[in-house]
Structure formats: structure tokens, C-alpha cells
View 1 (tube, each protein chain N blue to C red):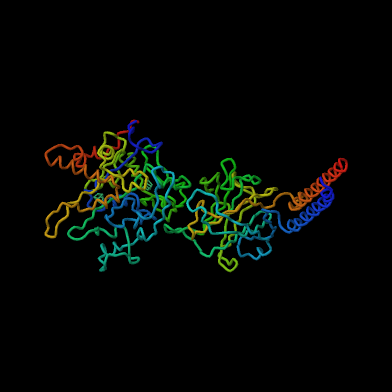
View 2: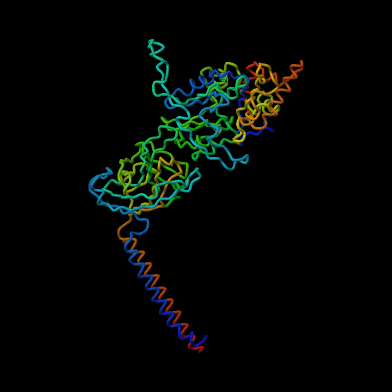
Length: 283
Length: 349
Ligand code: SF4
Ligand code: SF4
């Protein structure tokens, strides 16, 4: 090693340290600003928000959730048209309300001719609330509940253990109200799903859990002949029903990032100091 | 096993089949009415004809069904061609007629659809055919679901709600599992699955399975109603793998009974004896030695095999004309119902 190279080493170490600090500092506002990825806030409310137009919804924070075509073996599976759904959730002591709003300029309410398909939307929960089953309708060992609203005015509650396995509960416990609404500059749907927190039958998701509740969403555009596996879906998200003492998850992430940065700084410093020492001895 | 040299679907014990002799069809639609009365006089089924009889050449039912896709890309059956769902107009609407008023109460008005002015319907182009006078030509073609060996309708269903049943290969829609997705309607290249907009399920020809099982009020086995009621008795019903039966002989041995549109690669189990029309006439009414129905048209329907089939029929007929004996001609003229409908041969399996 030349003298010139030795002279530059402390500079390099200092630069590295500065870089790390800047990087961690830059992450902080980003994280502190956003909710943790995949969390959908749930607001406590007093009265019913079953009506999609209820005033109370204006106080409920919304999460905009991106949708993508579900992987599926059906023809035209990647031809879906809805890109995002806005999700809001609220609970009273005994009821959960979930409002979905999405842009869809065509109103497809019927399936009364061979080529007519209705608009649809669905919410998927794991039967075992804290698990994350396969996103595509769960699996045989890890079932999902699906609440499905159809533009024809029907609501179904389904149990599924993998694609093509859905079966309907005979007595749905979910009720739905839907209206046409304005989304941005265009038309769209505003649909509220309502269910009691306590489930009364086996194989129904217990919503009154004190753990985060995994949830996913799907939307079909009837005008585009979307049905079955040809649908726009989200990844798994969650409603933060977990115990509050855990602290908001973003703090956890913050501490984790800070921890990594500190550890890196210590490591880099230690290595530089040792190298400098070795070089001094050998030089 | 009786079907060593017959291709039937995996997991199917015996394959039920039908042969229709197109030379005998007079287009009377008795079969259509028999089927309609038995199966499709319910809400939502009014527009469906599980059995229809169309004039050929013609657009058929649903209109232009041959251009709507479906079936398999090749004989390997690993890639389906995605078809389309016909529109309600292509099938024809559910017109209502005031039979009561006109026929019973003597109202003085024309018997025509009460709701709307139709522009298309099943067999709209009846008897139109093709060709120029005096050599125009047409024939009738009854169509039901082919209960295919490689049914692309079955493959199309993401819920496996449509299936080929084990005992006889009849293709059925499980009305409990079906969710009305209509992928089977798209997937069948013969457009023989229909969507019931009232029940929100798909439905199709069931090969009158309760009749062939002897589940009727008299506990006796009967052929499907379309065959039983056919005025000219042009249908043979039995099992493709019954080597002593006429179907096996016509399809496998003489190769004169052919599937419609073999290029769709679903391997139908309804077969047709191709039509042999009288020769063409000259301007002054003399017969000339030119076939009236162009071979090219028959090839479009039945593939190139139709040439051999017609040649075989011709040859065997000539044999009989010379005073000889022909098993093939005997089968085609057989009037013995026990031979025509062989549905109980495998009962003690
Ligand atoms: S004709 Fe069509 S509906 Fe019938 S079995 Fe074949 S593919 Fe299926
Ligand atoms: S009943 Fe027989 S002859 Fe009459 S249209 Fe049907 S198949 Fe043809």
C-alpha cells in the first residue's frame, strides 16, 4: 500500500459514516409519515354506517389499495380493468362496517342474458383470523371466508379451500348496501359490508379477535365479462385489531431501522480502527 | 373389456353414442318438439334447443355457431381455443304468441310474435340452402350435444361443475356446483351448452339419461326422446364399444358414420351418415353425372374422411343393385328397434 492510499483511509471511513446517517435520516420521515405497509385503519364509531352515504364515513380514514389481475387458469385472466379500491373500516361495540369504493363507469346490475355479467366485489378473511392462507381463495388446510356482493343485489357468504372450491353458507350473516357514486370525475360504486363482530357458526371468521385481522379484496367489472378467476385482487392487508401495548407497528420498524444503522456504524468504525491499527503496526 | 380398439375417454366404462342418417331427415322438427316438451319447458329455457334441426348450408343455431370458437387446438388436447358466448339475438328471443286468443277465442289477427319483430331465430334460413336452380341443394342436420370423448366444455369449467360421467360418458352439468360463469358455453365449439338466466346456471342435453337408465314411470329402458320420436327413425343409439352393435360397425368398421367438424378435436360421440343427393340436372332436365352437394362442402362439415365414406356407401349400394348382399346397407335400412337401440348390452358389468 502506498503512502497516498493510507492517507485517504480516514476520509473514506468518515464518508461512509456520513452516508449511513443521511440514509437512515432520510428513511425516518418516510416511515413516520405512512402507516405501516398493509395496514387499513379501523375507526371506532357510535352509530350504524351501513348506509354507503352515511355522514359518519367522512370521519373514517381511507386506504387506497392497488389491485392487479389475479393469477388464474381462466381465459383472459389478465384482462381486468379495476386498478384500485378505496377501503374504509369502522366498528361499533358489536358490528364491523367495511366500505369499498372504486371507479367503474358502467353500471352492470344484471345477468339476464347469455353475455351479461354483473359487477361484483368481495372481501376475503382467513377463517382462522391470524393466519395468511394462500391469497387465491385459501387452501384445503387453511380456509377462507368470502363476502361477495353482486350488482344484481345479491350477497353471498362463501367458504373456500382453494380456487374453484367455493360453497355458499345457507344463511348469510353479512348484509350489504350499495350505491352508485362519483369517484374522482367518473362514476363508481360505493358498497358497505356489515357483519356482527361475533360469528355464530363454525368456519366463519371471528372478527372480535384481539389480533390483527388479515383481509384481502377483489373487484370484477361485469362490462368486461369479468367473473370467476378473471378479477382484480389485492394482496393480504390487515385490520389492526391487535393489542395496543405492542405499540404502533411503525415505531417498531423505526426502532429496527435505527438499530441496524447503529450496528452498521459500530461495525464500520471497529473495522476501520482495527485496520488502521494493523497498518500502523506493519508500516 | 369390449373396447380394446375403440378410443373412449379415460375413466369411462362404456361410451354411449348416436348415429344419425342424414339421408332420412325430413326436417319435421318432431325431435326438437319431443326434447323441448321433455326438458326445456321451464322458465329460462325457452330459448334453448338441446336438440335443434338446421338447414344446411345455413347459419344454424345459434347463428354462425361454427365461427364462435372453442374446442382444442390439436389432437394432443393440451391447448384450448377460447370461444365466445353467442348473443341472445344469435339464439333468437323468446317470442310469445297469442295461441289462446287466436285459436280458441277466434280473435281476428295474425299469429305472429307479440313482443317485437324478429330478425333472426332458430332455423331462420330453413330450406334456403345453396346453389342455383335447377341444382340448388340443401339437407337437414339434427344436432344435440355430442357427449365428446375430449369435451372442451368440461376442461373450460374452473369449478369442475360440468363432467363426463363414468358409466356411459354422458356429459352433465352439476346444477349444485355451477355458478353460471359460462366458460363451458364459450368452450364448446358446437355451442351446445346454454345459460339459464333465471336459475343462473348452464344447462345442456343430458342424453335423456333417466330414460336410458330405465328410471321412468314404467321402469323400462327407452332411447332418448329425440330418437324415439323421430318420424323417420333415422337415429341409432347404443354404445360405441359394443362391437356387435350397429354403431360400432358404422363408425369403426365401415367408417361411414362421421363426427361433425372433427377439426374441433373434441372427438364427438354423435356421428352422421353423410347425405347422398340425386345428381345434378342439365338445363333441359337431364341427369348429369355431377354430385349435387359439392364434396368440398361436405368436407367442410365432416373432414376429408367424407370422401371415403361416400365412396363406401356408393360401392355397397351398387353391390345391392347388382343383386348382391351388403351388411352395411342392411344396417342402414334396419327397422328392428332391438338393433336400433342397444342400451342394455352392458347391464351385467
Ligand atoms: S358437444 Fe360441446 S357441450 Fe357437448 S360434450 Fe362436446 S364440447 Fe361439451
Ligand atoms: S324427428 Fe327425425 S326426421 Fe324429423 S327433424 Fe328430427 S331427426 Fe329429422
